[in-house]
Length: 215
Image 1 (cartoon, rainbow, N blue to C red):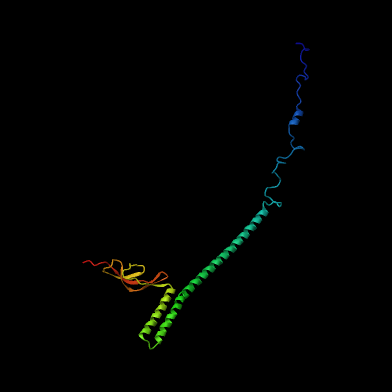
Image 2 (image 1 turned 180 degrees about the horizontal axis):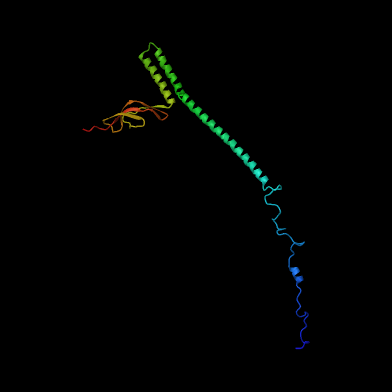
């Protein structure tokens, strides 16, 4: 092929391509005028430390506020504790006073009921000349006064009859005797018993049947 038939080449052979301009465009500028510092302009990244106030102390104002609030609360709890302690002491003192009054004046009502009985007995003894009928009438009136005093103060008598079932809570057996009655029932009352407010003051004394005697 002749030289005239070869295609035209605009670049001479063995000529190196100048890439300086392309490198200058592709390489970023480091430390140049338009360069930005790492993290600059990104949200959430500032120059100040999180939680720090203007004085540079981290959360100083918040800690002081919390400490003041905690101290106020402790003072309130302490005051409430002192009040509760004083109230408990007052309750204890009033309870002791009530117990002392109950011991001292517990028999006041009963004693007040017995005063008229004593007056009637003294009046009966003061009369020199009395018929047996008048004496008996006076004794019956005095007994009626005494029974009323017992009833008002919840003092009840225990008087088992023959044939009643023996109750060990309110009866006291003196002996067991053979009889025609079934075993374990009252044969005879020897002395009345008394209860006060459902509490046994004195059990009734009785004899109890042991059943029929065997030959």
